[in-house]
Length: 599
Image (cartoon, rainbow, N blue to C red; front, side, top):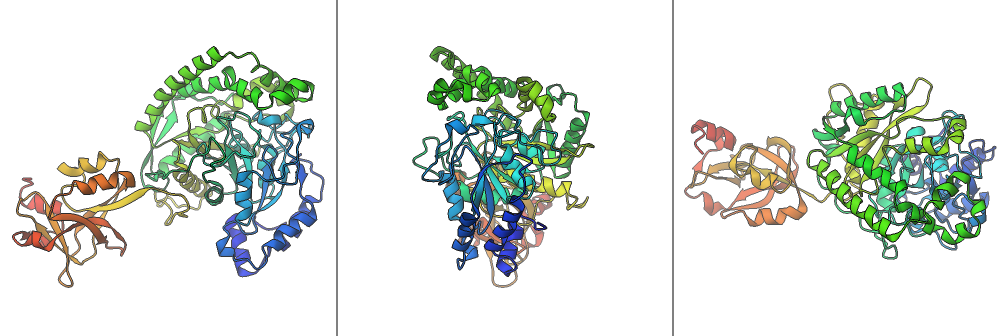
């Protein structure tokens, strides 16, 4: 099928009339008719069901359905009504009457489910070989692992059988398969996507993840899939993300110290990671060395601590009754959770609390972190010969994520000489999903050579605007400018400078009688452009800032030279009755310089 399944391309074809969902389903059915040599699928919807989904979209408004006619695959530990959920274990299977909450949200937005995909049994593993349905094979070289546990979900998208797919990510399962199959893999903030209708791995840590061809596609899916679910005790709304480092001309990113980096003998992976760091710098990032040790200490808790007992609890009745039906490496891991005591659990919870406090301090110095997604990749036969140790290597950079309540996006970062992909992961505090995906988009564009040498540092012109940002833009013209006495009122509220520019040529500028503040008045004629700075401030801090502004100044709408309108300082007309007109100076700094900078 010579048709790109990225969401933007499909929507364009649907809107132009060049394609219909029914035509796409016929093409996909032809592609799916062959032998499943990669062991992608556990079950699929029949031709009649897929055609019914497509026909149900006929006559509906494409613009009102953000995922109109978009085909997707579902990891087989997530419920789809009418198809068995196996969690990679046929003896465990049940057939749900209703779809998982997140699946239903996607269907309601026009997406078409294709079927259920292979996985490491009970979502326990990062390699894709721990399945009675066969080891899922890498999309680029079938002798190599696909990554797991969301193996089939990733390979389905990589081989052009679905536009996006759902996985789960408790320890890296939504990122490692993305890295090994040249995809974007987004692990949302914990709780952003409901896990109601998902077979638990670790109930308190589980997250539904998204595989997509592009970061923009992942953002489109996230915007639909995210939402508070009152029937899911771990659900929480995706809060505004604040400063959008993904679209900023400058940002700070943490890089593990050289002593903490591990590539397990893969020199090419090490080289490609170095190139990814350079690419981030070209995009405007400033690297900051980060001590990864507390993150790695946290990662070790996942399988050496009480969270293994949570895996056991998730399937306890089945496991105790039929342990021989559980795949051997999975059985070994889950059985280890039987004897963990309550005292041991609390001891590890205390340790996690202390480690999180240390790790959280990193965000005072950086906006995000950059790590390899996995240090290397393995052949299937090597993985099966040494399943525990090699799988542990794959989780080196991923296992700490949900324990520390972080969001992450895996993004492609080039190919090794053997043709296998390599990927890196962008990591940030919870709710910063939007900035992560925006920066991932720029990373993809830079890798593809779509950004020239002179524009690498510039963000894309317009974001999709699908996720809440919670920011307010504010233009300042006087003592709040960078380096001047009142600037601390901005920086103390976590505001960041967006740009220095000018107002529209519609203003007169005055030095108020106290000599310490300017007044800006909009006029019908005789106005000039006045130098200003535009800052971005969390909306939660904006009210207190405005409340501190003394008369005759206030905040209103200010027109900028580019025609945009932002919040900005304005002055009551009565306030300039005895003020000096300093419009000719063009700005407050120039006026201060003219008077000897005697503020």
